[in-house]
Image 1 (cartoon, rainbow, N blue to C red):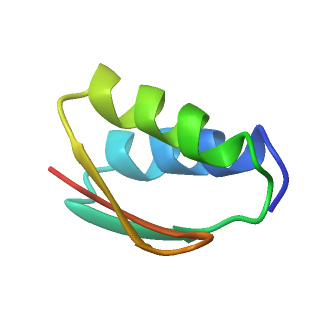
Image 2 (cartoon, rainbow, N blue to C red):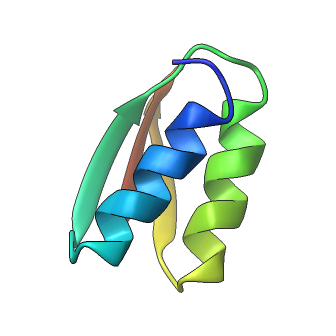
Length: 57
């Protein structure tokens, strides 16, 4: 996925009640945008491997 879609999908999933989301994104800006989106709602972001992010509340 290219930015801003990863952050938009993360925000939507968390708003809909998800407690864990994994997102695969190869855009270099994704890490920063996902980190910002996660911290805005008090979630924790973990880099599983390059390009794969796990966000948990």
